[in-house]
Length: 287
Image 1 (cartoon, rainbow, N blue to C red):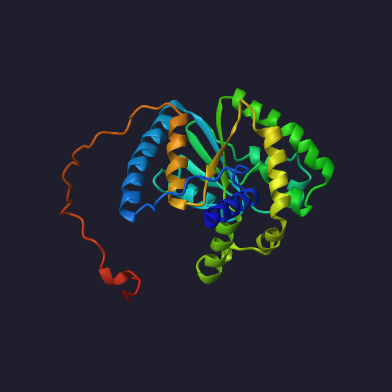
Image 2: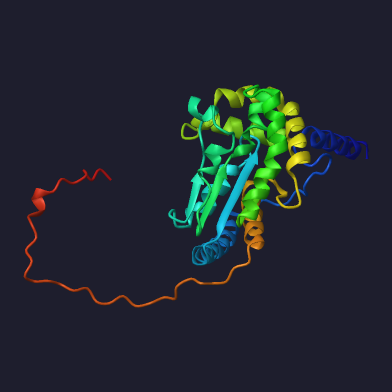
């Protein structure tokens, strides 16, 4: 009995410290098997292709913003969505550090230039919300710039929506324990080590400050017209499935996928003589 009390006490303390919704901890579920996950994902990918055709045909403008702490799993979801879609219709925007010229522009200007035309889906891997998060916490903007952002951001988003843009905002919420585990995994994996920057390391000591910045950002920008949708992201597989399922539910669409068809037989022009194969330079077959 005493053990259970201590366990509940520890869970509550961890939840309060984490970036999950205050003292609400998502129910611990059995891990999804790889086969089950892939089957569920395939069903969703088929629906994403249907949505893509609907967006293209109806010239819809779709913007999806992905925000959250480092290693929260934003990139994985973005790649999963974009991976099965036409890159001419669905593109990823992940802007780097602004240039000196961009720093002198209206803050939203470089993001506005990346917005979709009719028939496009744009996935923002971090967005204009950098100012309310990393720039505020790390001191990359002045307090006046930060306060102006909080005032003008809801107006900017209202203008987007009035112009016919479908705006969806996701916040990926990860616990400090899971974030630390993912950082350690990245350090061990040479193919993922590049994902950890010196700023990521520095931000580990600013967990509470980031929480405060996130809460204030929500208080200004979680509006009726452009609400934030929070994704519990400690379980990567479920986070991806839940996010994609929710995204599909927000945009009514019909199945406009082209029906299967038969290819005509290949035509061979016997009068044409191709140049010798030896004239070409081939990649060495080492495998």
